[in-house]
Length: 178
Image (cartoon, rainbow, N blue to C red; front, side, top):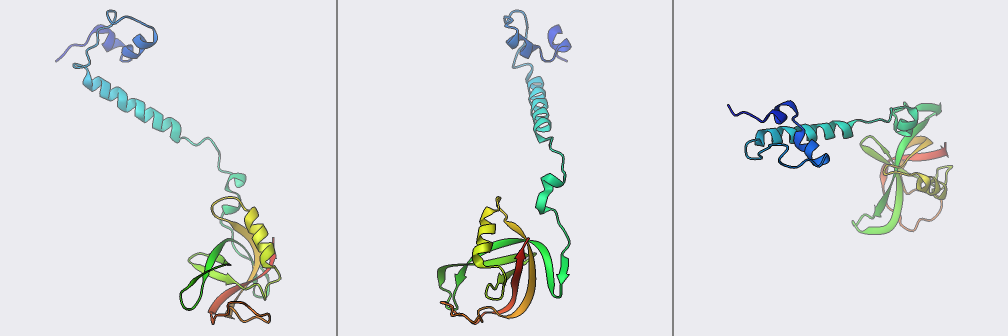
């Protein structure tokens, strides 16, 4: 078995002490070729200490840090109406021919389904929703809204639409932004 100099046995960090205390190399005997295992152990301990130090989260998880992203149950607010907190997404309009247009439409994202927002039946205008949506910061833009989910024609409105399609399915009617 190899014997280490006395300083290394007693003080494993003596190499580091010598660097900081400006000791000459004659005061400490340390051979890199003989002590590769020691260097590897020190390196591994240093990495582990850094990971432990930087992985600790010092911010407690509270209502203010969780904020609006905390899951809440839907609240019934009237016949067929619910108050929800949901992600609002903007999607590009694609016509029946598969042509992508410049028009953007708002959708409510619920779990795995996106519901088209039909503004001609809604009490909230697209401009009001766009303003509230743009005020939201963050990657996922969520709003608290009172909504009613219906099924029928998406493009069936009294006013003339520039791009009419025969889109049918479930859609959302916004009653108010909360």
